[in-house]
Length: 435
Image (tube, rainbow, N blue to C red; front, top):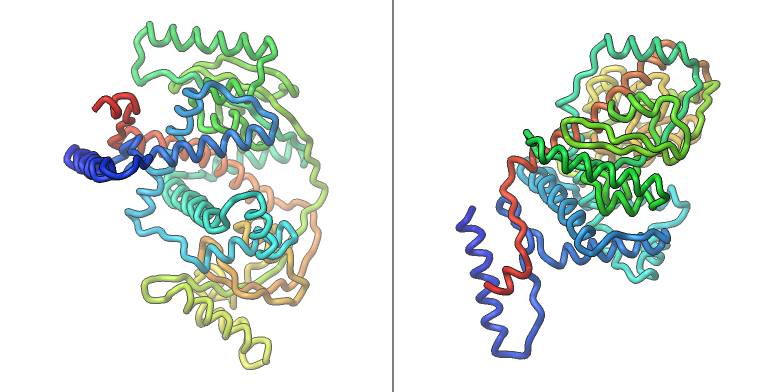
């Protein structure tokens, strides 16, 4: 690892010596080494520029340059570690899947891909850079799903307990938008470190109670996973949020500040940023069937899509039967043997691309081939209905809520483990210049 680092600096030094003869040209430099990878200074500056632009657009103040830089470096470290993991397991997002995602985004915005590209470029951004950023975001989502999902177990006892609670509460619920600041403590802290962290948490709490902006304070002070977003978590109900949040926000009102609360990772300060009530009286369900093909070293992305295109033509021309094709070719073990039948279901249980495709279909209509994280599909919407919440729906909902809560917790654990096991060196720009 040290040899790798020396080689990086040797190459940079050689480049600098060769350019010193000609006119001075500013060079990029290595700012962080992560295992066998690096973070360049340009990456840090680009993200800082983006954060500042977003803050300006939202009329949001930012902390000191050094505090912002520290948060950005931490985010880039975690991103690079996840991308390194994706590379090690051979996870790649191909152009076809990327194009499909962009088309779905454009449809949601009710514009064409060409109009989307024009809008992005009119703001001074590059559409190709947007594509690659989106490719990275999809990759991060996939590697998180692959690595974290297998760490989660949801027991029948947990489901039954939550189903009972759901039945007691009826279909009324409240969602909370949580603001979170974590004042971190080291592993196995001594009494002085604990006292210092506690004092810092009290100072932060005092400032918040005095009216300081929560988001700016979180960016400057928090070590939590949402620090760069101003510490703000999306709306969640009590059953979805991390246990620490759930234990303290019950009955809290908008604007309440709670804490500091000590845990193994540090001192937490929680603010209820907003709340909203949910009342579900009936459930919209769909009955559908699909054919799934999974790309592999043997079956390419292009070939999988082409096969589904051909199936679609055959079905529409009356030359083939959907159910028979599903039984013969579909790689969904649950539905393939049943002719692709997925039965009646709340469409929100499906991945977003699948759910959105169903939403755009009329009864009896078959979709064009589309890509999800599972592979390439065609789906037929057979029927829609509205129904009261059933025991099965409550069980499915309970499983989802528990899974999401555990996913958030295990994701942070996984990221912490990766970071603790990685070789990471942040290179001081001043020391680099002296050297």
